[in-house]
Length: 203
Image 1: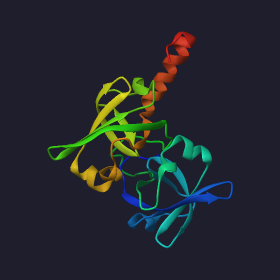
Image 2: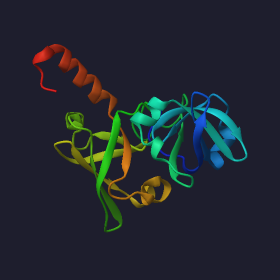
Image 3: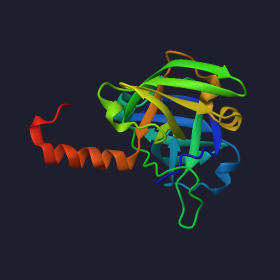
């Protein structure tokens, strides 16, 4: 479990085949002091297990399925990735409950400065707009953000200067894919409604 409050932006050192899967190596800073092998770390919002430590980096083993359903397969050496350690008992919950299980990838359709802030608009996977509500929560590349407005499957968020400076979003551009995790409460409600309405419910 995570909160969506990014600890730091790491830098990809490599993504290459490893055994039956892939290995992702990420350079990180101060957060490594409290990371042990086997710990859960969210990388761009995707919950991964620390499989190697040393040389100022942490390594993760990835399945082909993980690369398929997230944007981790797009990563190149030098790319910035958002990093967050799992929530500890007694820790601060300043964002919202984020599981680290990506629902799908969205496409950035607008990203522009507006005053001191930035306005980001994302097109989510078809049919997922029902899981978004204005003033609700969404995780974009693992960042806990508040939904501004929703139109079909597209939605917008506002990025304050702090978020812009400590996450990977400053390096993003229109057309990039971002990992999306919709609010857990909304997904449960959606499933309960679907179970009650049965096959008559529209997708």
